[in-house]
Image (cartoon, rainbow, N blue to C red; front, side, top):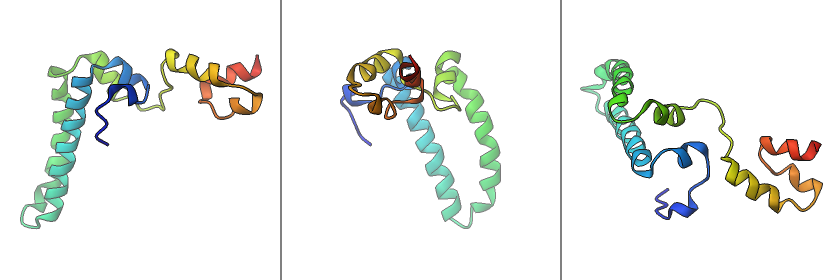
Length: 115
């Protein structure tokens, strides 16, 4: 939370391939949507529109194509557990001292273990 030093960001693909401004914009949209859903559940007089807003989120997501490119959305919406970029993998591989340390690396590094 609130890490402003870019060198401390995790080196995941969506962080390294999407500009930081757009990454923060996407996060702000998600945070605003979540806050609005939460408010709808708290205020009982308007809670009846909760399902309609849930359906409206589909259109909110579709409208993101005007703010982000298809490639950016593909990275931001990725459903699988994305490994770090190659640069980070190289750093991790250099830090491996023994074969026991390989087990601590992400799944992609298991190739090193079998070599």
